Image (cartoon, rainbow, N blue to C red; front, side, top):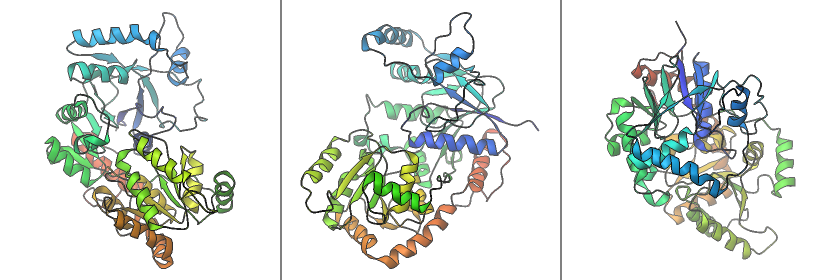
Length: 448
């Protein structure tokens, strides 16, 4: 039987600081290849294809670094795109294969998705966003006939012509919590509505998200499949090396700090976490690792205020580390006394399981997907209740028996989200659009 060929998007994976969706795309590509699929990744870089130019020039543009584009130089291009978007009722952009035999991508700091073919549609994702803003319609992509389906790893305003389109919707935060995102003219709600109508299949990562997709978007239950996510193995670091890195680079004492890992954005609930941590009056600092997202100014101001008023030899009770290399994150996780992740909402909550995988006690929210993911292997708190959060962090800071129990439960809970079971759920979902994957695992109806 011929191997299925699946096209996934590369819309998020060239971001050097990475995103949760980029991690999801890398995992999806790897798991599809493990089910004997041929995988193509579709990028949307702007390239100039001059007559007579060699194919090598295309790959260099897709993966190379262009100098920053000055505002004035962007005006002619953006003007033409705007005019084109207004006068066209529909838009189609061809996807072309990009030869990469000469390009060594093994040294890319944030790994790109493993694939069998690289494609690019010129300026696809930027133009699609603009076209949707103008017309409220998805941009069509002409893909090679060899592909049986396109799997879009986030809510993108694009669709492949002539084959089933699968969309992963991780959450509906822009609809449920509009004050936590930056949006214009209700575009996020319009896009999710368009995708819900156009999608042949919607995949999501928790039962919580599925309930909201069905209820808020009106999608029939049988068109929404829950696959969860597998927990990728973290890069191994010897304990001695991890402790040395934590001490020498970050000035932290192993086992003498709490750790938060994630972006600084409203859904992460960091203002309340910081306030609750200060109320708890612990003798160990809270370290915040991760990039800034959006609407983060008030959090940074609070962190700055805490630092300015710090007294005593231990320094500030809350310290921001910023975006860090992956191995540094693993070292900090390994050496943390406990991990905190009390988000208001998550589609899944992968950092919870990454901490559990290492046997680190976890505090997270008692709502939605976080309760699903954590099970009985974490301290669960009300993310809107400062007293409840403060009590939770005090428990983890002071109760050694509790921490020992959670350290034993965590790896078993994380192991429930494994590759075999993920591939089984993915195969069950793909079968709804007529694609057969070679996957073995648990029954797709069985939950972690």
